[in-house]
Amino acid sequence: MKRLIRSITIVGILLLSGWQLAQAEDADEEVLSAGELLTNCEEGSAPGAPNQYCMRYVFGLVQTVLSLQQAEQSAPVFCINPQVTRLEEATDNVIGYLRSQSSRANEDAYIIVTEALNKNYPCSISNQT
Image (tube, rainbow, N blue to C red):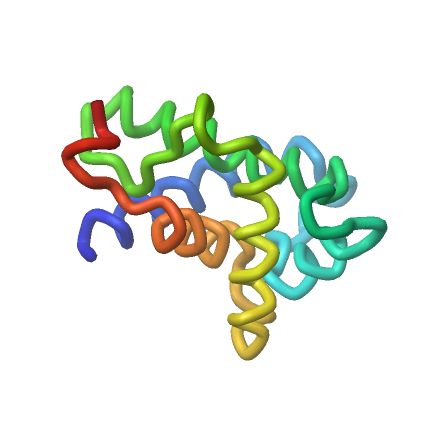
C-alpha cells in the first residue's frame, strides 16, 4: 500500500509540473478532477469504444508511471501486458472504476485512475516478467 501511495504522489507531482501545466491555458488552472475526467470520458464513448480524449489520458498516465518505475527501479504499481490488454479495454475499466467511485468526483483524476489500474491490473510474479 505504501508503494501505491508513493507512486501516486510521484505521478501527481509529474502531472502538476509538466503534462498538466503544458495543457493549461492559465497557470492557476487546477488539476483535472475525477468527475471532470469521467464527464469527458463519457462524451461520445460506448463500451469497447472509448473516446480518444479518455484513451490519451489513460495511455499518458500509464506511460508516466512506467517511466517512473523504470527510472527508480521500483516495484510496479500495476501490470498491463499490451499484447494481451488493449488500450480500449483498459480505458473501459478505468471508466467503470470512475463511475463506481462517484462519491470521490472532486478528487484528482490521476489518483483515481492509478487506483483503477492497480485494482484491474494487479501485479503477480507471472505477469511482471
